[in-house]
Image (cartoon, rainbow, N blue to C red; front, top):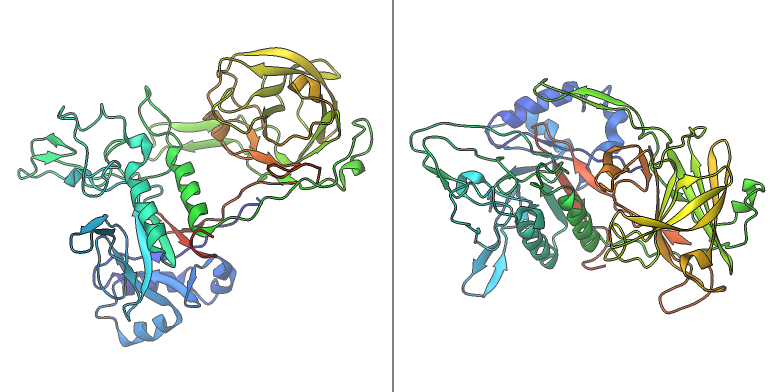
Length: 484
């Protein structure tokens, strides 16, 4: 709870007749008279009407009339015609102008509306995630590029997105967010795919880390894969396209009596909010029913956090949804601090971790060493535990700071998550605030300035389009001008 719900639209394919048959089904369900008002706030609107993708050829008169209440665009790969938005495109080169371009998605009158960017292309054509401006690297090993290591870099995705931002459409569609289904056709004519010679078979869409186009985070297997790289790359480019809110400076900063009432925090801003309801246990079968995914690590559900500082101390408050479950483990209610706001120092950018060990009144302050998970104790922070909150008081001297020094930093709360330095476990073990590998950014002074004043979590609102197929697309509707 607390996140922006995705907006939805439906892709019905590009075969004649499918739009009408699928619309009949949707008119009995999502778009029915009974359900329309229930789901209306979720619909992705274009030109003031719910958007739907499909082929409008040979529709019945009745369906044509029904579709007057919708905005309809065709949508398929490699399209370059009026009334169609692209599902997949390649960056092309215009020899006459010397410029790179992508075929634009257009309205029925030919007006430029949309561009598609993808994380990859097709193993069947030996065009993968590293396919950039018409060139796919080939290691020459005839091993389907399994030994290549460029998939994690998102080279093709970056190339397409940077060009799309330059071309400045109204809408960018990121296609293939969770496109994990793969087909295996066989035919004697199939002799080559994924830069490898084969005998009568190929994979069309999904195959391996290089030759696939899903962006959803994956677990590394023996060091192979791209982890959550594409997720953060996607967030970065969405921010560049849509723009972000400006960061606030900390306000209401004051000394806190950690043994006093929580009302002391009322004037301290902002509340760094976490999504709630994300510590539910998981016990679900896999797609092929071969295994079950079981995760019972959810424990303390973070609600919000606050920070205050005076000349000599930094104070932290974290609030949970329910009464705090107490544990003596090293991963109970940990606070990570990135004091220099640099990912190049410390463990995954964090310079300090607080509360991996504790007494009844004080929590250890540990400093990471050698840019690794190794850490040494350098002090203690006094803490108070309430029924559903924790307050910490850190002496600035323990952080290597002088009295009166006003500091900015990034921070993160974590409970029941990693114990061995696997940062990816922030995503699926216990709870973190904020989620996954994001941080809260605390700004007590502007860059180059001084004085206390709160903060902002840099957030991104993504409108995801739910499809009637087994793939998904993220539609980004620009709210501000280019590079705004």
